[in-house]
Amino acid sequence: MVKDDATVIQEFNDIVNMTSSELDSWLKEEQSESSGWSKDDGSGETVGHESGRKIIQILDKNPGKDPDKYEEEDLQHMRKVVSYCKRHLAQEEKAKQNTDSKSYKSLKNWGHDALKT
Image (cartoon, rainbow, N blue to C red; front, side):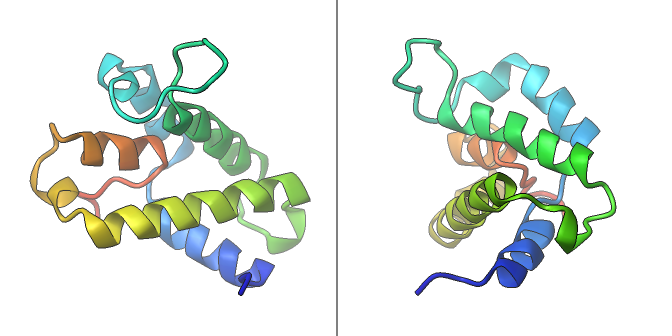
């Protein structure tokens, strides 16, 4: 069953607990590039790193989080972010315990800092 847009927006705004500038700073760090699956395009960028760049665009485009200002492309990516983060948070308690773990770094690439509450 596919979640309705309002649920996706709410969950995205709950799960993505980093600001645009925090995420941008993180993505510039070398360690942000060392976790996750590499994309198939030969760029060397990971899927999560690319996701982080898209999240920054979504946050910057709609800083007030107005549900009516999200475009379909935004909602599609927000849906991906929610799914990824929820799945990994449920499976990997390690992300909260070890900031050197790939789990922690990967979640951070997807806009979720497991150390923030």
